[in-house]
Length: 169
Image (cartoon, rainbow, N blue to C red):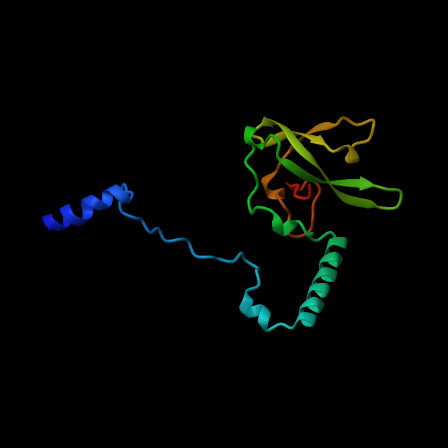
C-alpha cells in the first residue's frame, strides 16, 4: 500500500487537482405536475379537434358564469389564504370589488392598484391608492379599507368588498 502511495498517488498530485473532499451525489426532487396539468399520457388519448372543442365549451361556460357574477378567470390563480396585514403588505397589488350604479343597473367592478400603508394590523385596516381609471376627479386617490379574511378571493358568488391580488399588470 505504501508503494502504491509513493509510486502512483503522490506523482498524480503534481498533474491532477486534489479534491477537498469526496464527491456528494444529492438526489434531486422528483418532477411533480401542478394540479390540473394535463399529462402526456392523457393528451395522447384526446384528439386535437376534440381538445379544441372541449376548451371552447369550457371558455363559454366560464364566460357565462362570470356574467352571472359567479367566479372569474383570475380566481384560480390566487393563493389559497389571505395575505397577512402588516408592513410587508405595502406595495402589494390589490383588487377590491365595488358596486357601481349606472342609470340602468348595479354593476360589480374589480378596482385595483396598491397598498400604501398598513393602518392597523390587528383590525386588518389598510390604506389603498387606487388606479386613476377607478377614481373620479372629486374623489380622493387613497382610501382606507378593512381586508376581511372571509372575503379573500371569493370562490362562489362575488360580494362587495371582496379582495385579492391583482395579477394582470
